[in-house]
Image (tube, rainbow over all chains, first blue to last red; front, side, top):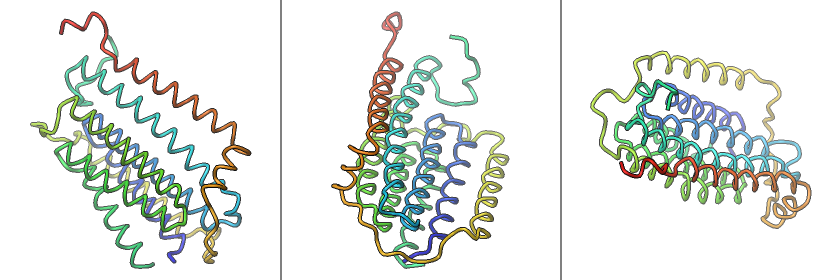
Length: 103
Length: 167
């Protein structure tokens, strides 16, 4: 059985990869993908703490991740709808060229 | 560290890096699917079977497909002519490395982390269902409301405006 520390380090690395992608990519869809990776890293942390915690029979970690997955799905749907709407308006998803909030 | 953990970790991290660095957007989406599958495998090794399969259903089955749809509805798989990274990408990578250094420093020096191995807990679907219908009924209803609102909102946002129909 792998110790808890390895899971936490793995999830920190995944979080850093997602953060690097969200900060550096120019395409709006890939920024959203980076945010999804960060959310998933947090979920893995919650499950690892649930598994190694003192009261796993309370199932709180599982419930937390279940609701987090639901919220992340809603976030992805709304985010991608926004990106499609922006693409229709500007003709691009390049974040450097989307620089005005005027309609 | 066990061998399955190492294999899954390497696969997942490599595909995550690929998802964040490839030029072709469709390839990025495919690599992202592998990352989600690796995370589902991690949930299975952590005795959270229900979450593992929920991850496969929601992320691989829905979110990845949604991202592929968004990619194909916008510019498609053709790589952009200029660089696909922003001009200040060095700063972004630097921030990410700093965040990872901070997090790993905290993890490695923490004394609160347990090192004892516990027997696998029971998390059957029956128990999860009982908890969802009992202690966690309010969050469940709120998430249902949120998903409904997000569904309607996403359709409204992505719906073509009337005057745009001529385009």
